[in-house]
Length: 583
Ligand SMILES: [Zn+2]
Image (cartoon, rainbow, N blue to C red; front, side, top):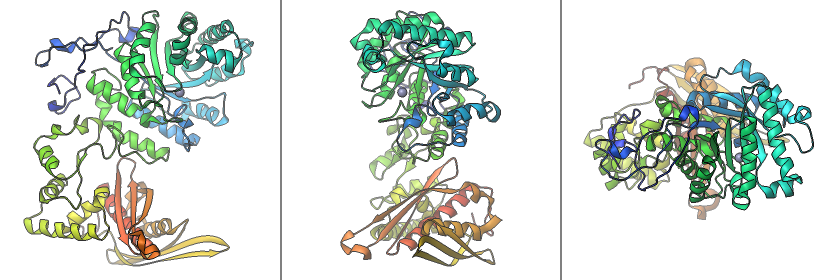
């Protein structure tokens, strides 16, 4: 790790950008106008501490998010028009340059999106892009329905896909190579005459280039001559590897004046690496999806591409001061698309700066960069110490310090005893940080006083239609509240009843909701008499937390996890002060 200290984003200079341990030397002749200035080789800088050349990187790249178009091809991902508008807001809040909103010619939902977007979206950093394809074979651009829909979408920019692989033109399109080139030229020309900025997605570019480079170049040339703004090289099947990218992208850059961009799918697990390889050779436009959504293995994950470029390669992406929005935006979008965030997702996952007990935790407490590749706060994430039954006193002390809690040695011993006893009973605090925090707070003498359970009852019925009804009786302060709610299952019904019982007392509850519910049966040898462990993930739009419950009774286990979830959410909502709460 280098010790460079000129990163404007770095709050902690121990976490400067790393260097590439290679002697890459790329001669990029031209840059797109607004990216013309380049950062110089870092090796000459004072204090850099190394004596090899770094690749010449562009000073900046345009980040183009396609979550709403390509990302929504992911199996199981379906967005309403409202969802799409909310995702676009998040992307703009993050600060990407372009948001591809959908394909107005292909489905009515996307048409509605483009109709509502100008009125309902107030984009400040991003430009909305409509997606479509070139004209069909044998049809005039003026009379092509898809192109007309693109113009009607009334965005400032459009992105059209063109087949750039001979095989696909001949076998899929069943037309001549000359006609395929004319389709690009006519379509770009038509859109330019309608005052639109045009991006050309060259589909199957890398595979096409390997088979017939001359034809792929003809496609790009036609787009350039007709006035396309960016030539986007697409790895549609996602099978390309970084070394190939590092050869092919410069071959294109050497022959065109137009900006070159890239679009990688992740079928080889290399979409992010390929994007970096392309930028390393001079591409200045990168497409992908926040969280890497997309069909099959997904698209390049912008939540990794962006910080890799900004923090490690010193290439400007989103505005520097917004990098810390990366983790909250990633989680917020995951919620909007209703897919649980992957805890191991690089940079933004909840586990990626989590450290388990032992030597490791003592070391990281002394030097936080010893086991972390960047300062997690730079991307809005944070270091976590994970506590399990193997955890010793020191890990627990770090955890308490992290939460700002003071535990004397007696309290510490009692927490350790409780942890041992509870983990033996089936609790697993390693994955339930929020419940652990409540346990530690209890040890300091704190008692949650948002509500006190008097009783609950759940009735599940299967007479004709299935129904579940829960009644919850709680004390809120001195008042006894009773509420009944129906739900599509016991947890849902209990959640509904508890929220009703707490009523308008805690407005913050409106923002807290359950994201995921997982049940695991422990010691299965006992069949239905075994112990059930319930984990509940909850979120408030910015952070996520996990709580746990364990019991022989699945409903009791669920109640424990649910009750912890609500208490934790209220505790951290700030605004809602519990009656008589000791904090
Ligand atoms: Zn794609």
